[in-house]
Image 1 (cartoon, rainbow, N blue to C red):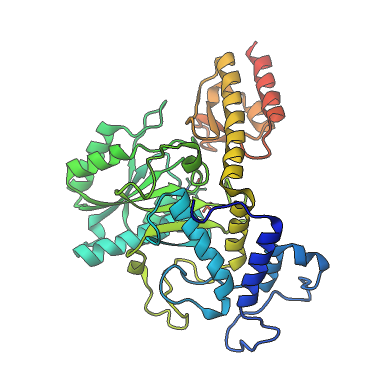
Image 2: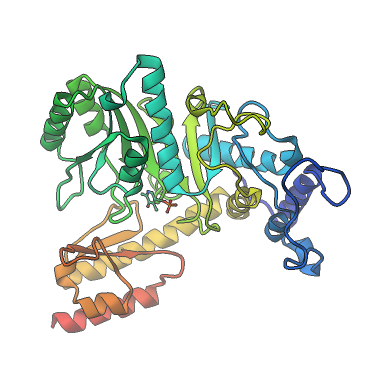
Length: 411
Ligand SMILES: *Cc1c(COP(=O)(O)O)cnc(C)c1O
């Protein structure tokens, strides 16, 4: 680990307050040309005494704008202090968590997984057009039927056709034959270039795609492709829980990742993380963005620097070992639930490195699902699954309550 270590509250305060000191101070130094200032002081009290111990809230009130991407080129000098913290966060995720080579990745804190997935598809669409002279109609986007709906959303926005790969009902793994014929069909439609969004834990099942299946099928079909990994849910768990994680920057087939800190890392909303190998992000450079210093190569414009600081603070408070323990606690509870379900003869899907248990809905009466707040795969009559997501607040007591209730009705 080069960047990830455990810091004390004092060290975190010193670092964040030090960074804020390097940002523009609207109270004392000009800065009269930017449409930005601290939060409205009539509403958000900037002199509350607790703020000196609250680096995140203090950053929120100072309201730095992290517009743009700070891992390459110049950035707005007004917020250089907190941008440094974001850069360190990006390196921590790309190098320490996802095993990227030093300095070989770009990235930024996006609004969420949706934006990060669309950012990736946008970059690859432009890449194929610029480098291969591809026409829009020759580019497709491929993901599994368990993928998040941000993939078809992005396909719609970018005006490229979405190809949905079938998965096996019980294993949630890609079906090779179906994928082959899907790709043959895409080729027959004139598709030559494929943007792949592979799952590092799906939202409904926590299932992780076997990348080899995609790579073999794409190579066999003779399609050019770029692979993005959607780790919006699994990004802060799977690389830690699975020591042989095949989905990292060590895998030459993968070019980019999404990780959401506002899911498993319990960060405030607005903390999706986008990571990509160097020399790609410029394909979405917006030439017209001339009033922003440096390159605006992100889908969102203005964004809160406090968000980046919050994720950095979370990871630094735990450190890598604290994080390992946190994840293992969740996995322990998940295994505990699975054992009880086995005893009850209930059918479910679970990836051994993930904290989601997805139960056949026909085995869970709707009232019980409702009582325990289980989430179905579909809100229509056709639902087939209910999921339990073992988050920090989902303790063994709650799981025991659920399994006891299930045991009563199973009698
Ligand atoms: C939640 C999720 C997304 C979308 O993330 P938002 O942060 O809600 O935009 C994308 N992919 C997966 C796998 C997710 O679980």
